[in-house]
Amino acid sequence: MCSQRSRSIGHQVNWTARLYARDMDRRLKPIGLSSSQLPILLALAESQALSQKGLVARAAVEQPAIARLLDRMEKEGLVYKGSDPFDGRANLYSLTEKSRSKLPLVFDEMLRGNERALRGIAEDEVELVLRALVRINVNLADADLILPAPSNR
Image 1: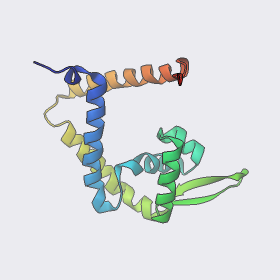
Image 2 (image 1 turned 90 degrees about the vertical axis):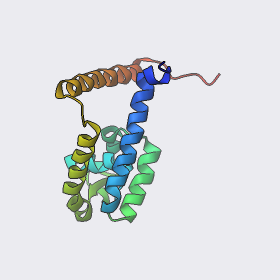
Image 3 (image 1 turned 180 degrees about the vertical axis):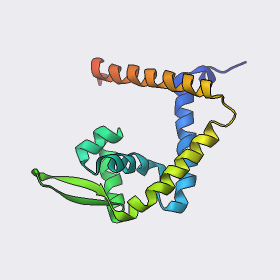
Image 4 (image 1 turned 120 degrees about the vertical axis):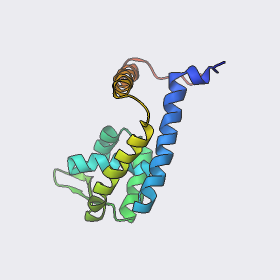
């Protein structure tokens, strides 16, 4: 008999994300990185330089978490913080040469992690899951825009 949790999309997606993050942490540790840094690394690799606000939007990570991660990554020499030439009040973050040199290894480990996760699953099944997840993401993103925030009552 299947438990309700095993039939819940939310539970399965959450559990899969946790297992994937744990696997990526194990893979990235020898490189000196963690899975929590991936959204920032990937966003900056695509954009050259972004403000903290831009990173929040692009990396889909909450502002307080981004601030802590950026501070830690700056101390580790992974990101550079410089002034925004168009807005003196804002800072722009970019990857350092140290983090750029790690990107090929990061992409290799991401590929290996995906290969491990998808082992034994047919390509048409993978495509079906990807399409369903994209639709779920759109549905949930739309809900954020149209549903009122929960009250504190």
